[in-house]
Image (cartoon, rainbow, N blue to C red; front, side, top):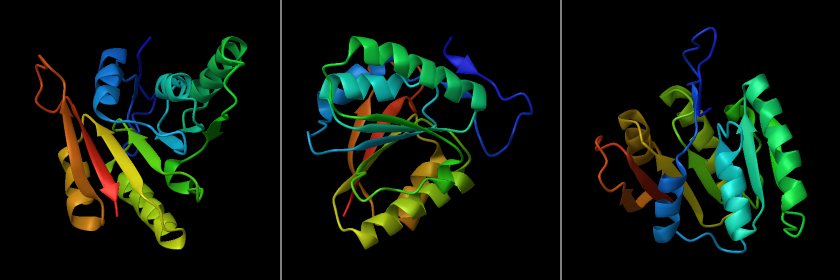
Length: 185
């Protein structure tokens, strides 16, 4: 199943919705993950993006998830995936907790978001990413799928990140169905 609603309809965190494989295939025709990259997927759900990137690029990937049931499913998926992908040495990590509490590691440099939470929370997470870049200078990218207007405004007005690419889904019925890729510095 590709969707999971919150039982209490929380305002800060959005429902789980998996990124379609077709969208990921298109993104990675236009965006390359390097062997030195380390990816963080905020609101990783059951791990689709985590496993896709890990399998395709064989780089370390971390998934952050706040829904306890979904997090447990991600761990189960990881166990099954690792049986098939033992040859890939790069680590996969899942962390349970609020995205705004994630301690950005100095080696983290690619951050993926598919509208996992409110703009208020997104702003906090991006501030943590920027703070990390100020502590350990490096090139970092933020990838937004189906970007909300408030997220775009935060990126344009509140961060030093600059838009470097748009990847639009062909034949999309919704013009918001695209990836925006931002780069720091």
